Amino acid sequence: MDFSWLSDPFYLGYLWEGFVNTLWLLLVSAVGGLLLAVLVALARLRGPRPLAWLVWAFTTVMRGTPLLVQLFFFYYGVGHLMEGVPGIQETFMWPLLRDPFCFAALTFILSVGAYSGEVIRGAMQSVPRGELEAGRAFGLSGFQVLTRLWLPRAIQLCLPTLTGEMILLLKSIPLVSTIALMDLLQAANIIRDETFLVYEPLLLIAGIYIATTVVLTLVLRFVELNFPGMQPTQRRWLPIR
Amino acid sequence: MTSMTPEGLIDWAGPILSGALTTVQIAVLAYAIGLLLGLLGAGAKLSPWAPLRGLATAYSTLIRAVPELLLILLLYYAGAQALDALLAYLGMTGAVQITGFATAVGVLAFVQGAYMTEVFRGAILAIPSGQLEAADAFGFSRWARFHRIVLPGMLPNALPGMSNLWLILIKDTALISVIGFNELFFTIQQAAASSRAYFLFYAAAGVIYLLMTLSSTALFARLERYVRRGQPTEA
Image: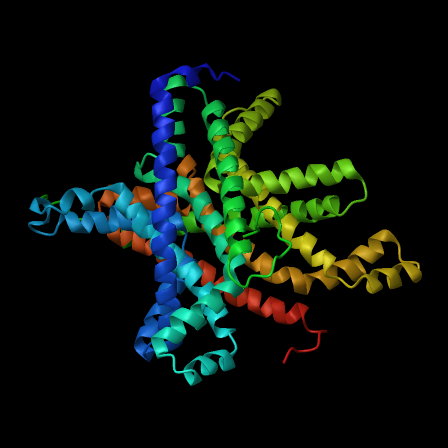
């Protein structure tokens, strides 16, 4: 095992950039994905029939195909189509539309929206009807019932599953190295190519991932324990997917 | 603009179908080995002997804490090196294709086994202890108790998890393409790059994977009805 390359500030810079990008992507995809998930759940439960059907098709496709294929589809497939749109390369949006980070974030947001959307839908269905009717009886508007009763109660029910989904999201981020985005794995790949060391960079980032997973698990468990109305539960250290 | 005739789906249908076949072969083999590893892991985790328990816990915890792609890369390099060394030792060289297939299966099975361990452990713990005590009281041997009571008793509990893992495995086979082994998604990538019809071929890839996962879901639903045949139907 030769870790002498770690003293090279150049390689440390790669690793740091990769780490920061990984965390950024995690944050953007988690926030955007969970917002989309709520919309997905609402559309399936209360949307007009065609919209509910469309959203069902969306979740089925997103959950039935590999994330890697989706990433390639959006970055190379849709990206290639957009190159053909006349005039698009002159607009101020173009640098953004070529940025792998945007495509990665978009793919992850759609994926989290589909997986977590189903989780939230199930939880919303198991909130007792009487509670929502009680809210209406106390004069809350439909929107207030949603934001003050229905969603908080549903999230209480599915919080452990949602935190599990977030750990899964963290673990799918190395996929973006395939579309040339500088994440931890891409940093390791560069170091591997330049130092001809196969195992050391990969083992190092495996260690970083384990540490990040542990920290994220602890943070999410703190959230879980402090979520209003949560019963303290005996949870496993790492979630099964 | 180039006046080259564009290659379409038809030109690539053959290679894509054979790639899909390879993917199914990898997935089925890896699943079978993963099931075995999962049973062994669950047995070890529930064993009264502490070192065995520790070993199984380390296996399932570490594997599940590291991203699959990273594991596949690490284990692929390590596994390919080990297998090459073994083949060279046995005097067989040039069997690169076999090595690629075997390492792909081995790596996916090793990862799958860690997740399967947790599924089986939970399912075995959910068997009412009275049933196991009854088996002991009737003088069942350990093996008879395992395959007459434990196995059929845990299957209904384990099947939803097993079906999930199978779907995850099918989707994880696409990761093998990163290593450059010629399975479905690798073939698709070659087709897309050569024809420059990226949208078409990646959409086609999505459809093929979707067909695989949807048909598996239907199959598992039937299987679940079958293993639950002796159980009272839930209201």
